[in-house]
Amino acid sequence: MLDNSRMAAMAVLGGCVVAAGSPATAQVEANGVPLGGFRLYPTLQLNASYDDNVYRTDGGAVSDSFFTEVPGFTLQSNWVRHDLKLYGNVTAYQYASKSSEDRADWNLGGSGRLDVTTGFDLTTGGSYNVLHEARSSPDQTGFAKSPTEYSLGQAQAALQYHPYHFSFSVGGDYARYDYDPTKVIGFPDFNNSDRNRDEYSGYVKGGYEFSPGYAMFVQANLRDVKYDLTTDRTGLNRANHGYSINTGLDMLVTDLVKGQLFVGYMSESYKAGLSDVKGFNFGANVDWNPSTFWTLHLTASRTPSATTIANASASDDQMVRLGIDYAVLPSVTILAHGSYTDSNFHGSPRHDKYSEAGIGASYFLNRYVDFKVEFTHQERSSSLGGDNYKDNLIYGGFNLHI
Image (cartoon, rainbow, N blue to C red; front, top):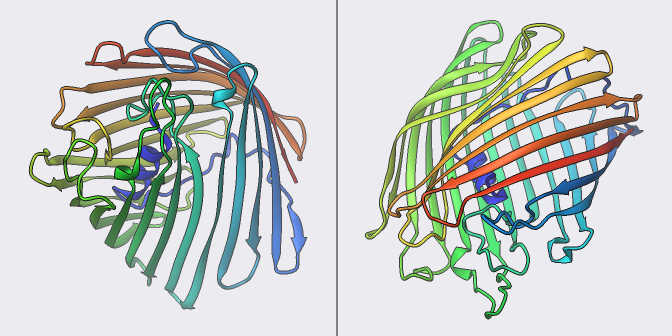
């Protein structure tokens, strides 16, 4: 399973993928608490889990159970024009015996839309996140005492013009990564200041709605990455820049399908000593409702992600994920998913392949409480001996909302 920083990078690069909901799983919408021109939606998740390979090791797997508490909120405006949303949550992990894995991730952010005039608006947003690198990350040393903490700050802005049938938008994103030192067993702390960086990206997109709810688009993206230090721990300059040109289909609000899919070409250029990454580009985030009982979720992406692997310019992550929801009863949904990720470390002999499959169920007790249980199996097959792992995770928990 990829770490949080890689997943965040996937969201920045590629295209403006639209997240979509699922009628099969959205049984009852929360009412929220009215606060003048806003409505507050507080939530609380309480989970209990069992992991049979906490450290994601090839041999000598260590198991443990842990609890997760996730309090959160969304404050959403209910204005006729314009839009404003604030949100935040904390994810706290407490392990039964492996206290080194105890941690708390949190995020706080907001987004807004200014309706300048009919068909013309300005959108903006930003967030600040404190996260921890996953044990499954190839950049997380197996001798780490605890997962490495890092912060991620993000900001986005876009101008959109969408008269009848046609649309045009231009926007930009900024992301700032700051890593704490990694505490290592039997050694001094690893200094991660060579991983601290700023990532800038911008895009121009034009579209045409050829049928109600369906629009073809062409999008050009630029990306530039600058590191705080000129060279990393191995003496290489990892600064890079790139572009992608994509064409695809936006499926807007329709009863049958919604989301986005695209194909194109991407290129990432690196300094001397590091290999460039280029070639076929793709992405998808689509929800399809063939009936009132079934919902299919397709997610796919190609993302060059920053890495500390020696001589590797990037981890070229190509991922596809398929999820299936089946509503056996109005209050009960069976959930299944499978995913595959190919991570090619350009310039290095390392090549990782990740696979994951899971099955579970959700039960909506009432408007305020739902319960979910799931079993997930993960594997990593690496070209480097000793870096393979298999992991089984079981969890169940309640989601409380108003």
